[in-house]
Length: 404
Image 1 (cartoon, one colour):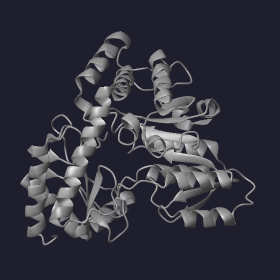
Image 2: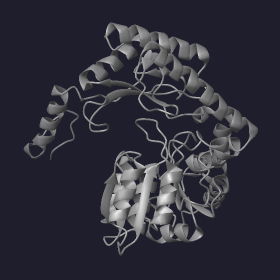
Image 3: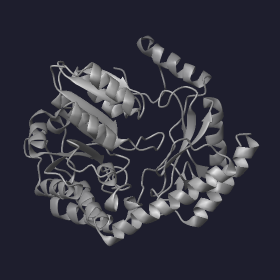
């Protein structure tokens, strides 16, 4: 009988995977996972080294907030460590419903449903509400979860140039007699460039051409709008967006995603949202943590955290530009440092790490070829001394590699 072995061996059937990995290495696109050995904080221990952390989505520092820790511990004591079933059987706990009601109030919508991740919230929703007779009009830089949801729906997909309202209108005009349903979909904040969607103008088009309007607010929840209510609030589009998707995994500091909209939409997703139907619901500790996060966010303390996030963002962004770095089109805490060449970008990231700072390289296929960059994100809990030291490291390494 064969026994398990830890030795690496590739059978002939999977040799093509090894070949593909070797190709990535030859093009300087191969990476190894960095291992976080401490709490997710502005100063973290990664791969055994203490570094300034500019690669986390922990915008408000809530992953380690005392109120969230206490909520998780109390929920485990009261409810145990797991829900034990999918939502549609016996996995819907009272605290799940309370969290969804809380999020709906926060976002100013009728109802909300929580999914296991932001990815499944997007993919599960688009694929549930549309079919092969329908049409999707999508920004070319929308998140992979939106792209996958569009493909799963089997609807016809038309892609408009990034943030190009005129190009979007051209497509809508060409398809104005479409017989099926139409969905106009965009990220609120784009995850690689940090720019903001032209949401009011897109809402105008959605209304003119009778489209469902959907926004993925993953990187704007907890960041934009009053107390972090997101792009819809920030740009004054309440009542004009049919579907709002958000995440519990970034500014909220935990894990999961959610969809907000009308009661009919949420009830439909109960019946047809495949991730909802076929995945075990969130553990009580995660649910309680998210409740505590939204309670904190919807308070004066939450408003102060968002204000501090933006103060740090502006300070760091100004510093990078003053040094001569190209920060692209960023309008948010997501601040790319554009390099272009993938090999040079990965070298830049490695050298920064050696100097005590982590800012991971992003290259094709996540971004187009020739547009490789480092993606930096500051948080509300970075101290100014941390950011000053980060800028000093960027300057030193940037000059050494002739990037500035």
